[in-house]
Amino acid sequence: MAIYLIAYAGLHSLLTTVRIKSRIDSCCPGFSRFYRSTYSVVSIVTPDPLLGFLKEGALLYSISGWAREALFGLQMLSAIGFLYAARAIDLGEFLGYRPLLWSVAVYLSTAPTASAVTPCS
Image (cartoon, rainbow, N blue to C red; front, side, top):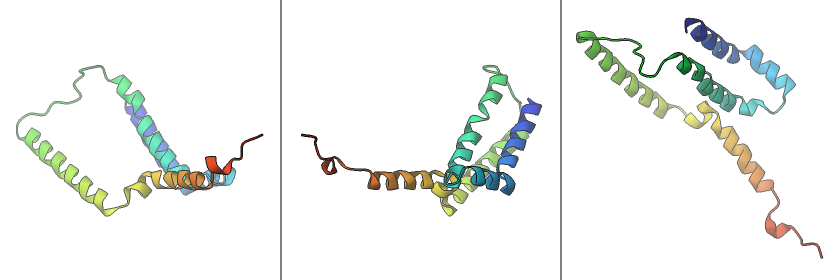
């Protein structure tokens, strides 16, 4: 499991480098606007095999006493910090779905409509 976590971190670090982004942009022009959304999908899908290592109901760790309360407090602070940060940035741009929605809107605005098609007689 540790090897998979190291590979996971390495893959995500590699995908964020300028060298990889420029190489993808040079071989697939126009894909750069979808890069962020593709990265988001990859970052969601790649932890799935990690879940396969865990057996159903497996205990990952156990904390008791004051450490448990401290950990819960840290988790709550982290959730509040995440919500605060999410409000401060444009999540659509960060997650990469804004360019995807923009492309769909442009496609739909340039697609022929039913009234523009003349029937064959």
